[in-house]
Length: 192
Image (cartoon, rainbow, N blue to C red; front, side):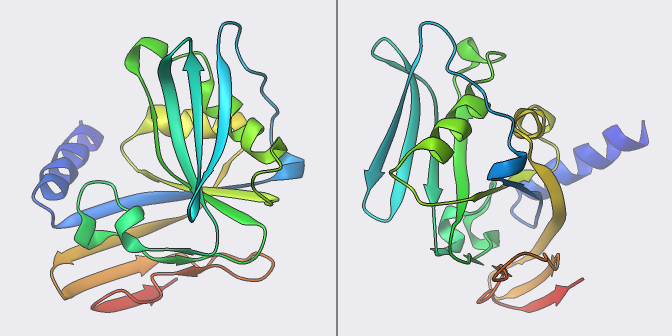
């Protein structure tokens, strides 16, 4: 009961734009669980300006899609519900950040996210050895999908506030080259 009350309170605060809590997840190429493309689907990995589009199609229909960026990920691309609570990331070389991953409900349960992650790592369109994602802490199906691929949680980002009156709690992530989280956020940032 406590967990349901907590999730309900969080969902209300998130819908009102006061709070956002996301789990940061990470996998290195060597720890990834390779997933093949399910029968009847095909995957596209397409460069588009400063990002890569990854789409899983069944015929002409897009069944699942995601975007991957490297380098600087602006806060406008890394938020769950409230763009003003987005978190800017500075990624070291060879780290790709997955965002806006979604699967059409009619195609869920086919491990399309894991297959797209595998295809992205195997692609010559993007030069990365690590993939990261941040997922709303209440979105258990998405966390399961990324865990199937081998991603592990590396910390939780808490962002609350309105406008420039904000507070952020970000994890310190130990990785080669370092990852900057919340590098130019308004308000106060606490790294634990």
